[in-house]
Amino acid sequence: MFLPIVAYGAPILRKVCTDIPSDHPGLSKLIEDMWETMYESNGVGLAAPQINRDIRLFVMDSIQIFENLEEDELDLYPDGPGIKQVFINAHIESLDGEEWAYNEGCLSIPKIREDVYRAESVTLTYLDENFEEHTSTFNGITARVILHEYDHIEGKLFIDYIKPLRKKLLQGKLNDINKGKIKVDYKMIFLK
Image 1 (cartoon, rainbow, N blue to C red):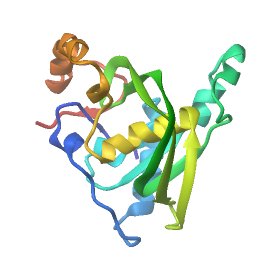
Image 2: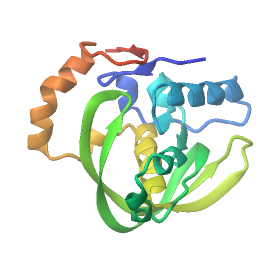
Image 3: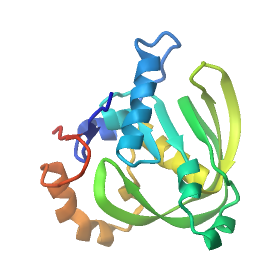
């Protein structure tokens, strides 16, 4: 089932989310719905706060990015062919490597893209959809998508990383999103 995406301005997007137990009600269905919602919205990641849930859960699929790269771009990122993964109760252990810029967007902040600097790699502890624990290191585009989605469960947005002057210039567009004055081809909800 397609779930509506929460738009910028909703308090839940600024909330630090809580860990969940293995018997969290309807978890399998929720994960299935999150995959459907992410793909229907043309996203590569989706975090629970974006569908109005304050739990530490996100899904991501960096394989799509690699499938859409031009031939001469394939060598730009060390993590090909990408991964498709569910992350439950994720917590960062370490960030490593040089910070690098990439033009990011967000389903909750449609039609705005900005260069964001993030670490080259991230090591995190998380549970998969079977509640098996993992500690893994990710790099390249995969690390970037994970860090973007991880920020959501920490109450952060990609626009928090841009310079104050640039953010000020975007404020009109952000206000329009907050007020629902935006047209997208997926269902959104506007919570104030």
